[in-house]
Length: 165
Image (cartoon, rainbow, N blue to C red; front, side):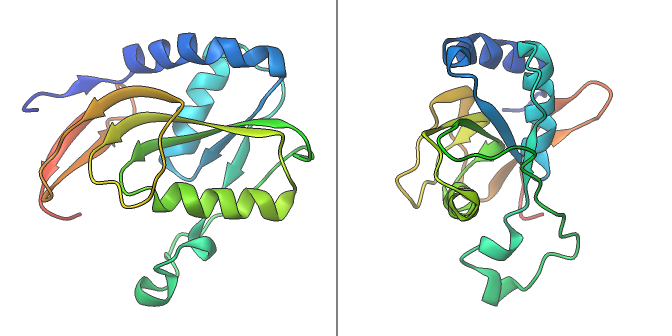
C-alpha cells in the first residue's frame, strides 16, 4: 500500500457488521490506546448508551519482563459489571494475537462474560496465536519489516511504514 487509506469508511462498515450483536446489549471495551479510539467511534456510530470500558494490558503482556513497563501505563476502567455480559472487545491492529490474549486475561480478572466478540480496524498477517476477529474493517498482508499505523487525528488514515517504530 503506497497511499493512505481513509479510516471513517472502514469504521462505518464495521458498525454495520456489529449491528447484529446489539440485541445482546453488549458492553464495548477498547484496548488502549488505538482500540479505545476505534471503540469511541464505533460506540457513537452504533448509538450505544452504556459507557465504554477501557483496558490497559501493560501488566498482562507476556513480554513484560523483556521490555519492562511501558512508560505511559494507563488505568483500565470497566464501568459496569461484566459478569454474564456480552462484550465487544475493540482494537486497532490485530497482528500477532498477543495483545488480545492479554486483554482476555484482564477481562476475566474482572469476571466471566457471557461472550466476547473481537472487532478490529485492521487485521494483518503474522499471527502467532490462534486469534481471529469476528468483525474486521480491513485486512492487510504486509512484509515482516512493514507496520501499519493509524495517523492524523483530524482526518484519520492508515499508513504502512517501513522498519520498526
